[in-house]
Image (cartoon, rainbow, N blue to C red):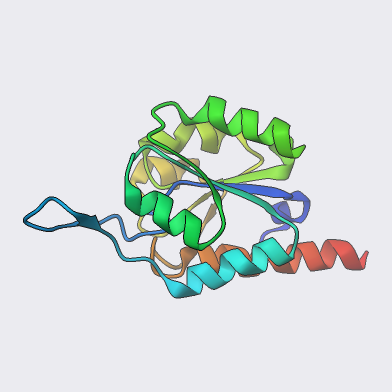
Length: 165
């Protein structure tokens, strides 16, 4: 995945379910939920951090799983969020990003406002059709199975290219 549009990106916001996960949830008989995440995606988050990219997870789900994964990766997280765009805008202001320097990675209709607001909208390969249509970049990999790492590799390459100029 390569895109010249990634050259100016300094901040990226992620949805959680369907981006960090394969959009499935395992529910035990006691109601405990669990999801599967990619360790490769976790490595990608580390690469983005080393490249100086600002990151946040903005999720509709209010779930301990979201907070636990964000904590493990040392990512800022806002979850239980029904209207993501105001959260994204406030975060961008706080980190000094503009729409042109921000990417958003989402997979469903509740991500469209954010995807339409930023300079680079990204969707995993298995995203809902509406998110795929809104995306500037669609990863080859599905959510929860390397899509974030794919973005991280392309974005860190763009950052290093920008630094070399």
